[in-house]
Length: 416
Image (cartoon, rainbow, N blue to C red; front, side, top):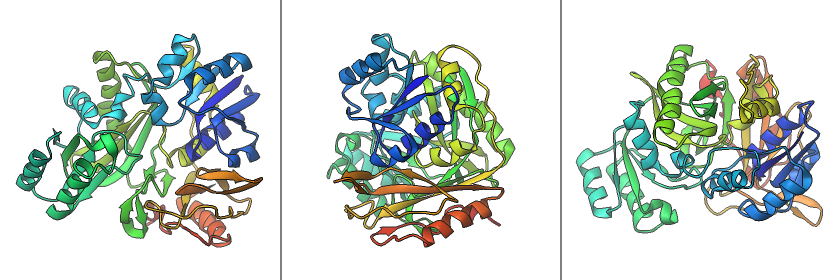
């Protein structure tokens, strides 16, 4: 098989690298990909992910068997609709189904209509009404931009002042552009967060192993929200009972609800969950693999990822087998991220005990240099989270990381 991955980040690097391990796959192309991927034999395609016409032409010309969509923006731009209209196989939700990520209010309606446990909420387009509601409810409270905001459009406000500042940033300062024209204000939920992803084909749900992301920039969950500073899997402090109930009461109800809504979902459904005293509740849904969760979940997949996708696209039951090993991944970010950050630094080298997934890198006259906020992720597996964590931090401490920073506590919550 020849496969095409849409996207350019660490998530797409992990997906493409896993695809290449399949004995059935001869070629993996990535559009546009990034220079760091070439080390693994991934072939880069210089076509932008929003250029559907040229991507379709490339797929036909190269005889690509099917395409896998990594990021959310192409999904919401209707890449699946366009490929299917051209008679091509592509794995991911169409534009209508991708709205489960594209609009927080859409997702909330699916949850309410299908009795999926989540926080109470109200949606607002009027800034003053939103402020009045927040003042009435008080803090702690959660403020979310309704649209896409690269994982940064959420403020967990512990004070009233912080909540009102978030509303001003989103609705009047337009920090997230049109995504913040509408906001969703939610009750604050206390508990341990975790990510539960699944392969979905209409009503059929095939769950993956859970992971835990670290959104805050600095140790002990301090600092601003980011796209994710690291992740680990498994999450031993979340019981099997909670996960099993979440599969039944959240993932399966969401898949069925999307069918009933005439927006059937095929692709990767991501549930960002929180384990509360009354069970798991939904914080958010995404319509694709998470980043950095993918980089610690896929290394634990024993089954052939390409075969799973091929089976789902062709109407067969996939076979999912998972390793008992633990995986820990730590993001190396540019100083200043998630605000203004440095660029152009050389890329550190790491020992062969770890796997490196490249994200924010570019080619500068034949040299791979830092070009984004989250530059790469260093991942390792071992029998325990403690051992996997030790491998990753040993590699990071032994590397030249001037101009970069990373959290030093990824996985710490799981180690007693």
